[in-house]
Image 1 (cartoon, rainbow, N blue to C red):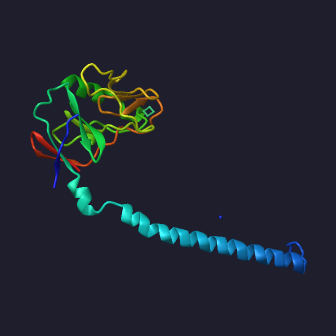
Image 2: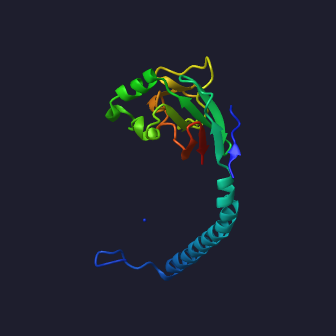
Length: 196
Ligand code: FES
């Protein structure tokens, strides 16, 4: 069930002579100790697996955490911040100029080469929906709110260490390695988007 969005790694012929018995014994003890430690490590790992699987959310819980957002009030040039699984999502209605700016960039020159078309749904290039989480260290970039800096490329600006994203939310400058991630989403209607 969807939740409504809150907008905002042997010795051979050349091997060294065999070690004296005492030393060999030491080696054997070392081996036994190492084997015991290894077995302990495996045991600990085996104990962790059920714990991790208990911590992983079930498919039901994940399905329940989809988010529906009414986008009817987002005018061209505007963006909103919604919440999806406790993380911000940016939903932006690109202007024709912003679409043109994104399409004018040679894709091969990008750090994380993707076209605007690959980052949006067919026939809906103006709707740019991305996670609002910087791919450097996870800050929330600026650029959705009115008056917030959008950076040199008119998209989003992460003030934490200066990453700058363009109008397709692609990384253009600064330390972030990837574009802002595009979550799974579908258009339930022309004005209703279901994220997740
Ligand atoms: Fe965004 Fe470092 S977290 S630039």
